[in-house]
Length: 328
Image (cartoon, rainbow, N blue to C red; front, side, top):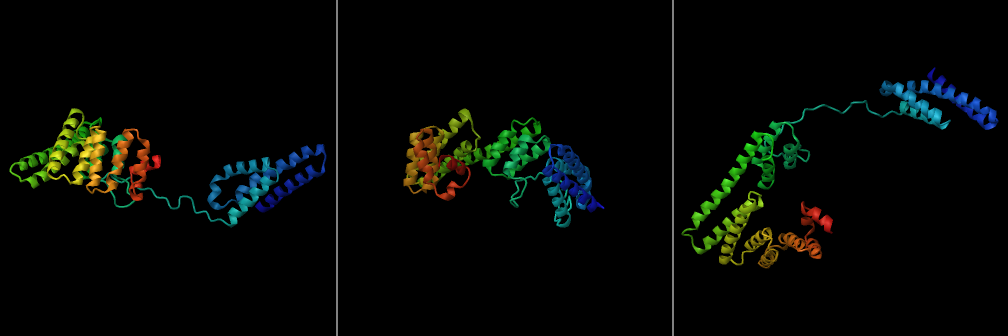
């Protein structure tokens, strides 16, 4: 019966087309009547021929087929008929809902997870949780996770947590930051005591270690304002004392250059980095710093030159990859 009605719709459409092609202007009303009748019949029968998994949308399908048949004479009806028959006899569409499952959101871990590339929680995700999570307990656990992070990731997150609206989050962040500061202070005190009675070679090693401890304060952002100026000054002082004992130590020249760069002493910093390179430090460790100095001096051609000299592996790593993409 359904195929008979479909044949009737196609026949009405064919007669309507014949009338408009072989009649005069008075045939237009007859064409409109036949075409409308064909569209109504098609809109009623085509949804019944749809595959079983589409039977829930018969009303919407009727409107769609009616619009196709009515506004696209012949082509609309033929296209809808072919599409329905193909979907019925060549159907490969899986059942709706197949392959979907509802799973609970995993709990927030106490440390960054790197089990697979699909892990949900990494260092960057903890920043987003602390910034956007409305649940204070989640923000608290994000702060607790910093105990398992590298300091370069943990310190910025803890600094952000000091502005959290929750007292518990702020107090925990302050306690963890204070502990990190106390550890560095304790290391400096121990090494200052160790200086007493040490020989010349040992003193150079101790001064270098103290300079690195002070530099860690500045590098991690634990010191600001006047305290930062004091920390940088102390780091530079101990670095120069170590250089006085071991003037060929390339790492000490590099550290001196980084300290001077942080102090905005650009010419001295550049000279120190050049000495580090001449003392044997790989050029790849110096070029990014020289590029920064060149940028601050507004020597933009030199910035491009230094970045071009980096090897492809270094240029592909973050954060240098974005700088290279911009400048080169």
